Image (cartoon, rainbow, N blue to C red):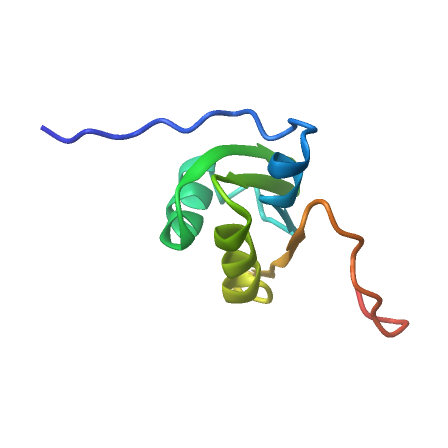
Length: 102
């Protein structure tokens, strides 16, 4: 018998600890990639406390900031379902990029 741990859909808590341990995943092909796929990919960096998938993007809530930062470093720029993921810490401003790049 296989036991699958369900993660919460809640990724919008506003306390500082939650904000600092939340990852934004942009440019996500949600026509192909499902919540379970996101959970599988990002769980290798630490315990995923919550995951919410929306059209074109997702949020992953980790139990701590260290795991969230490891996920950003490990997965940003990854190509998934034909699209290059844009991954950042959700509580931090997006880094500036040269004009002309998305």
